[in-house]
Amino acid sequence: MTITKLAWKSLKNRKATAILTILSITVSVALLLGVERIRTEAKQGFTHTLSGTDLIIGARSSPVNLLLYSVFHIGNATNNVSWKTYKELSNQPEVAWSIPLSLGDSHQGYRVVGTENQLFSHFKYANKQSLTFSDGKPFDDIYDAVIGCEVAEKLHYHVNQKIILSHGVQGTRFQEHGDKPFTVSGILTCTNTPLDRVILVSLEGIEALHLDWINGAPPLPSLSISAAKTHNMDLTPTSITAWMVGLKSKIAVFQYQRKINQYKPEALTAILPGIVLQRLWVLVGSAENALLAISIMVFLAGLIGMLTTILASLNERRREMAILRSIGARPRHIFLLMIYESIIYAMAGILFGFMLVYGLLAGLKPLLESKLSLHISLTWPGHFELILAGFVLLSSVLFGIIPAWRAYKTSLSDGLAIKL
Image 1 (cartoon, helix red, strand yellow):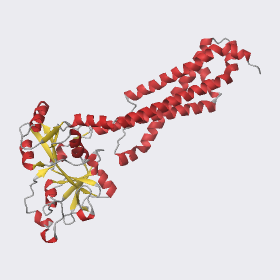
Image 2: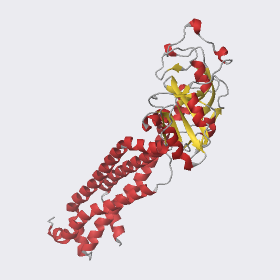
Image 3: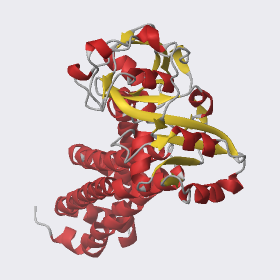
């Protein structure tokens, strides 16, 4: 009989203990792999929020703040940029395209972003994926709006729905632009980016909303300008919040960035979004390190549980070891028996751990996407996950050496000395 078969039969005789030990390792492995998969997907989703954009430009501010309010729609800009400056800098020969952004309004907790139709053709996310519509089309009227999939789902909106925008980020009923309702013209396909949580309107629509507002205060009834009248008025913006730029040549990125940062008429900041995204992830990445540390500690607790179980069973198995020695088993066979049992524990724990974590992720996938906008791809285990599995197996073998060495040293003398 081979050592492997002997180890398997030995474990079958101790089913309850073996199952509990395997369950402990399974939970530990599942937690370790689950944290790693969520950490990887979260980082990938975070860094893939924007793709194909060479520079983001706004009023003089810190790079992280500019990225937060222009891409993630968190916080507010320090200042606006004049329309004249935007047109002058976006018409430079090295610029291939530009997407203006105007922020400041909201709707039931969701940000409103004023922009132009080139956003739908030039904005890219993930691996240069383009925006698509699950229903409807881009805006082509002053009072058209395109909404993200989360807005549509949470507020139960559909194409041709009438919506009222509010003045300011914390808009109240007293700050609503009730005289100028917008119509939903399209709903974006989910991107798992901040665009899922915004309402996109034209720059002319933003300008029309605020024609009769003075210093952020709603207009008096006698001074109010109706929505119909605005169609015949000049709605060229006076300023915007920021804009995204794509250049004709990647070689010109740093030269154009320097030109923006040294622009004399206005104080501006131009950032490379990829670099700032990585920097921002470092700032918020301490949580992922804490989760990884906790999962490693739980895994070590599982290994210690396995070690304790095997050591505790040695006293009960001293007669078994003595009988094996008496029928010709050498001390190294006893040593290998203990090691093989540890390997079986580890292999079973790894297998069931993978099954458990992928089952949980498959079940929680819709919830993670809807509540946290976290897209989990159920692909084959990656390179790092396989390394983790190898680490688990190696650790189990190393921990198994302790009881194996003890059994190796005491199997014959202790076993024959036992009194029945």
